[in-house]
Amino acid sequence: DLFALQDDLTASIVDALAVKLTEEERRRIASRYTRSVDAYDLFLRGQAAEFRFTPEDNRSARALYESALKLDPDFARAYGTLAMTHAYEFRFGWGAEPRAALERALALAREAVARDADLPQAQFVLGQIQAFRKRYDEASAAVQRAISLDRNYADAYALLAVTLISTGRAESALAEIETAMRLNPAAPSVYHQVLGRALYFMARYRDAVASLQRAVEMNPNYLLSHLLLAASHAQLGNADEADWEKTQILALEPDFTVRRQVDREIIVDRGYLDVLAQGLVKAGLPQ
Image (tube, rainbow, N blue to C red; front, side, top):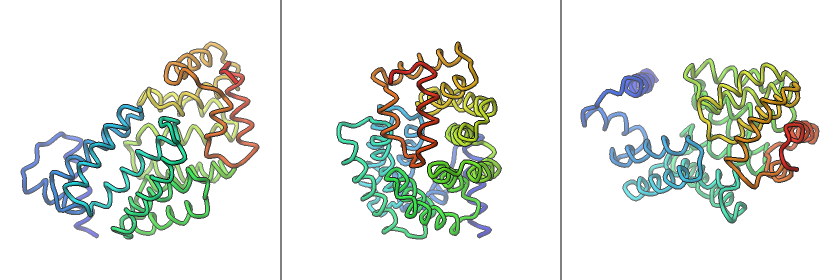
C-alpha cells in the first residue's frame, strides 16, 4: 500500500510540475496498469480529450483508447475509458443510435472488469454506466466495490453522490460529493457540477449558482453545468443571468428542448425531474 501511495504521489507531482520523466520512470508508473508505456501515453492523451466534453473530443479520445488497446489488449483501464466514450454518446445525445451506444458501453465496461475485477476504475466505470441505464442497485454495488478497493478514490464518492441525487436523496449526496472534494482538492469541473446539482435539488439556489459558475468557468463546454446554472438563476428570479445561460446552451445544442433533456436525464425521482423542468422552462428554454 505504501508503494502504491508513493506511485500516486509521484504521478500527481509529475503532472503538477510538468516534469519530463525518464524512460525508466515512465515505465514504472505505467506498469501499474499496462505493460506498454506507449499504450499508457495514448491513454493519458485520451483522458485529456475526453474530459473536455465535446463530441469532437469524445471521438478523439475513443481513437486514442482504441490505439492503446491495440498495443495492449489486456489494458483494463483503457477498456473502461473506451466504454465511457460510448456512454457519453448516449448521455449527451451525440450519436445517431444512443441506445446501441449505451449497450456497447456496458459490454466494454464488463470487459474491463473481466480483465481486472480488483481495479477500482473498472468498477467505477461499470457503476457509471449502470447509473446511465438507471439500474441503481447495480450502480451502487459497483461503486461501493470501487470504494472498498480504494477508500481514497474520490471519483467513486462523486459517482455515489450522483446515484443518490438521481434517486431523490440530494441531502445524502451532499456529504458524498464533499468527501470527494476533500480527497481531491484539485476537484475537476464535474465535481462542482455534482455539488451544484445536489444544492439545486435542495432548493439552495444561491449556493448552487456559486458551484455551477465554478464548473462553467473550468469547462465552458459541459452542457449539464449550463443547464443547472440557468435553472438556478431562473429559480432565483435572475432573468438576465438565466437568459445568458440560455444563449450558451443553445450555442452548444441548437436543437435543445426541455422535453428531450428530461427524457435523457438519469434521474428517476419524479419530483426532481419536475423541479428541473420547471427551472429550465423558467429560464426560457424551448419546451
